Amino acid sequence: MPKSKPLKQFSDHATSFENNAYAYPVVSRRSGGISLGVNLNPDKTCNFDCIYCQVDRHVPAAVQKVDEQILLKELEGLLTAYRSGTLFEHPKFHDLPEKWRGLNSIAFAGDGEPTSYRRFPEIIQAVIQLKQAAGLPDVPLILISNATLFEREAVRQGLQLITDDAGEIWAKLDAGTQDYYQQIDRTVVSLDKVLKNITELARQTPVIIQSLFMNINGQAPAFEEIDAYCQRLNEIINAGGKIKLVQIYTVARMPAEACVTSLGNHEVDQIAETVREKTGLQVESYYGN
Image (cartoon, rainbow, N blue to C red; front, top):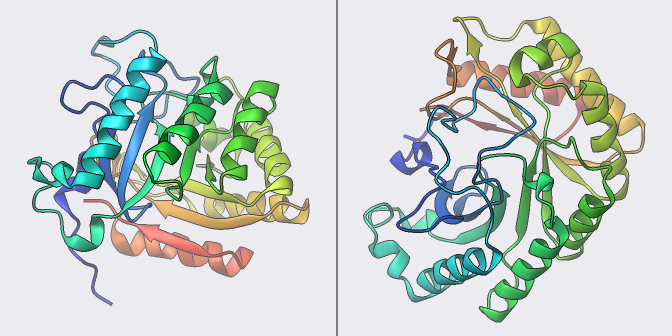
């Protein structure tokens, strides 16, 4: 089946919008429409330093901390703009096809690891109340996380609030071996800890696994690495974890390192098919630009 031409908006996931410091709209391939991003890390602090990250850490952060009142006011403004239709008068969205115009999520993502925010459960609760007050109670919350801090009590509380509100946890898993994981994600947190945290959460609620694969100096991931990745997924399942979906995607925006380039569509599909065959899980593919 031929691949549809990617929307130009897919390559624009800037965490800034107009004069906003924290809340921003994007067109999300994986949400399937408009997603309102909430940036809890405007200072660009993260415990990962991924080679494919789109955040430009060479430029100093304009905002160093979160002002929750301003954040909520910005998000309320975007919800109002969506409901009134004025969001689609903006040059970024005015030519967006109708099928992509649904508000499909409010996503905690941004310029770092959102669960590191010190008032994580409090801001989750405030956003839930805000979307309810805006008359949009069914818009799901999505947490996009590297799963490194799930064992913290405050984070557990926030995760519970999201799942109780019928939201989703998208947990990053970019590798099957420690060596490849370290090459990609560049962190002091071990792959074993990430896998343990994902497994423990998946025992309680279904999770979505988000995995980005890429060329590094022109080389796609080795078969042995993809095989090990599938083994890690099977270990989560065999330990009682529930995986709702695996998202296999590749680079669609400017990465941190010049050695990183996008896989071809067929390469993404090959990885996705391997995951289906070896795990039996539902898998979706997302392509580069």
